[in-house]
Length: 351
Ligand code: PLP
Image: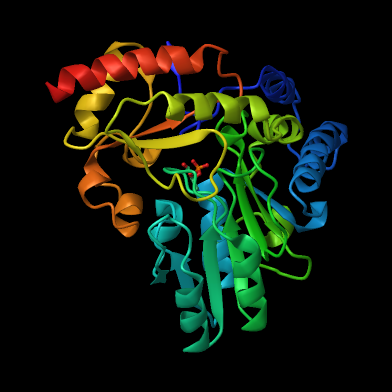
């Protein structure tokens, strides 16, 4: 099997799994004050510190959650009192599910800064949600410029860094930043919302007052311990960029790469095969042992037209694209193996 669906979930990192297993053996609850509880608390706080350090936050202002969706939701619902929410047209469903006004993107997939400036100028206080990197195309938004516009208009900036974390350096200037453990190579079930010091989101999950009242419920300690270790291991890797570029250089004539002109994540390629449905492409590639997806994992059970490609004006290609996303441990012969399967698939389906 050739696993090329890291944007759905990263390949597990053995050291992160070891840390999760060790945390499962700690008997205490981090909220208990006895010795066992204090041992669990130490595991939790070590992970919190590693996560904050890795992504430019501070431990006291890092809220541990059960995943990226929860971190995004806490930011948007918990920080938006009295503010309009403006969100990019290519955001993940975790953001799109919350009522907002859409900020369009340019044909290359990057945020339309002029449109953002107009939207900021025409209304009251805002909370702006822009992802660092798109999960389907890998396109990076101009975050420094977005942050400058937000600052100039007194808006808060939430950055969904779920796909960018560990793969590129994340520009500063955010007020809140969401990450997800399983996109870093940790077990599923943990995430974090990093906050600018001084910001206090209203909890969306109430309960026992954990996480300084910002997120109720016993913390998922094993997954968090794994995320702490994965956060230290996940760093930008030129080897992965070279493998992705080799894939794109070897594509057969007629295949197009969405967002190729924009800065992108080094591991992601969104490939459109005009005239051939994504579903049929996925089926044949799966039969050849190649795991890729169409669109985001959440919608990969049902292959639908991608809202990301539609927003980029690629209406025709929106149901004809597959996403190839290389994991951190992609084998050296990834490009050769993928291209052999892809060419055979394309030849058969175009016939
Ligand atoms: N944001 C982005 C950009 C994502 O790609 C994903 C997952 O695919 C999420 C948020 C949700 O993260 P999680 O799966 O941890 O809930």
